[in-house]
Length: 134
Image (cartoon, rainbow, N blue to C red; front, side):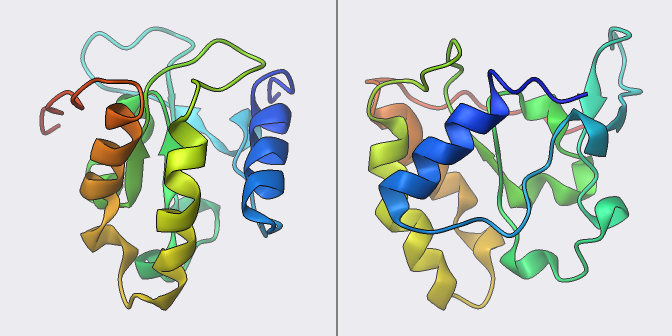
């Protein structure tokens, strides 16, 4: 199942920081086994369409593991720096809060996830890695 030491505190922090409540949070229960080259038995992906998201233009998946996104849903993926539970990386979610809230007014969030990744990595003084296409 989901690791509550990771998902729960992170979601609670984001909800508190933003003053919102998320309708849906994906956990390990929503994953499928990954099949990419070199995948370990515990590697999983989070297939957004397969778990019921019909309109992907309004879905952002936030994760520190880029392999979690299916290739055809990569534009929905917001890659953030990895952190050690229970505390997310200092400043990342604070830096992302308003830009994520601003996405409520855009027709397609997928046009903005790469810029949000830059904001996330800049918050810890890094540049986001270049993600290879699958």
